[in-house]
Image 1 (cartoon, rainbow, N blue to C red):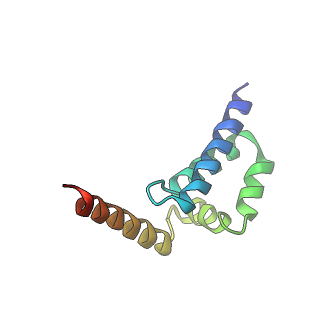
Image 2 (cartoon, one colour):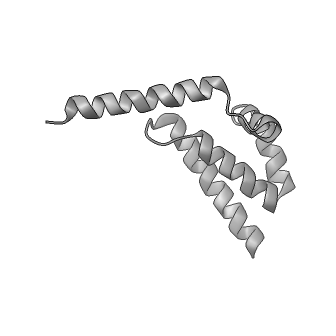
Length: 93
């Protein structure tokens, strides 16, 4: 039962991470790393698939090997948060 809950949580986290690519206020990296954790505990097959994924694989591999988020991901997330905050300040009355 726990295995299925972890698989469901991993799929949900991966879906939210995928949405985060297109929506600036939704972070991608934390959700993908959460999905990797859930898949590692629930299914080695899904975890291997995530590691081999063209988009998410390098991010997960860097985290598992070095406990580091890639510099481009940090720059992109910081700039998107700053842009969102700037838009919020600009549009507020």
